[in-house]
Image 1: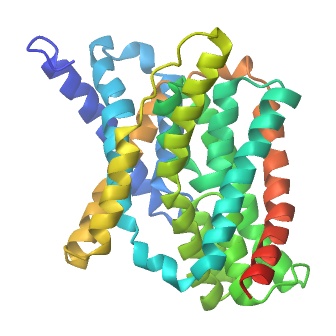
Image 2: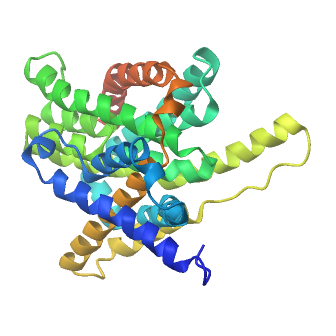
Length: 344
């Protein structure tokens, strides 16, 4: 990829993806996108898909290694540095209740999603896992982190991200409305845990929490960050589980278990950040650069996504996302009530 003959073309491809990331970052500052919690990551994948289905054949094929590099190496690096958004100390503000809600939501949502997707809807394994990961953990970032572990096709990641955007946006508006209308019988603190435990994207959680109140906003963000931290153990578990499933199918030796290095490094970075070795200004700069890197990865995934590939999938991913959305709303409410009863 970076051989002497290919280096210039690979760098050209990376710079081309970076231009899309710049455009997505610029557009994300528009009020219309900020008001509905649309992040540059989402805009990036949309811009990439527009390119993939219009101008792709008119640009140099030699740049393709740079696009692939963005979907692989830059993606993994972005996930690692995502850890600078978190600290272990932040967990203390919601305590055992927030941890319990997060753990139950992530584990039960994945189990339900996998069974419904593969057994009932007969959806392919990769699309099911990606869609379920996006719903259960942290939206687009979880889809991005899961994609290299299962070696999924980029268009399947795009499908999963699109469901996250759709239902996360619906939840962002619906939750505060239902709470203020009296349809969700929780206090503001518990409502924040409910929001953070069940809404897809971090941006959607922030917007919904702010719409309810300051206490809800604080709890929602912390619980959401706990769910984000669960990316690492989730990916490690997923890698072990997939290796075991290969063994069961072949009835031979177990497939080699590959622990995703970027998941381990993600936890290491969270631990490093918990000691506050770096000034807040430096951490903010790292987070901005990391958002740009993840936007590059999303843009590159979009560039690998042709609309023709969606035709073979049909509406089943949407059906799965609807079922998971309903589960998160109803099941998540009772999980919060259960956690309140246990911890009280």
